[in-house]
Length: 44
Image 1: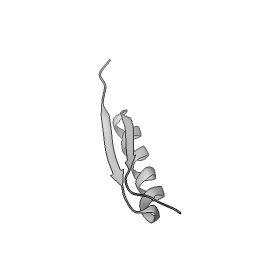
Image 2: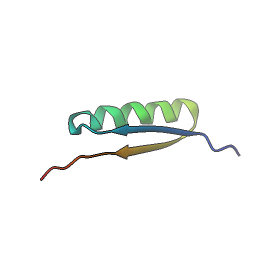
Image 3: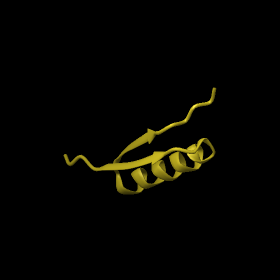
Image 4: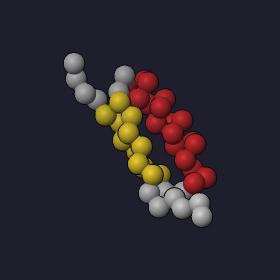
């Protein structure tokens, strides 16, 4: 079994959902593992 990662990061809260949807679609298309890193999102 091969480990196929798909990685993305997001730093804008408004782009979190669209980025996650796109990442999930790509991981599904390529039968890969999705990793999403959130940087600097502070909702306080």
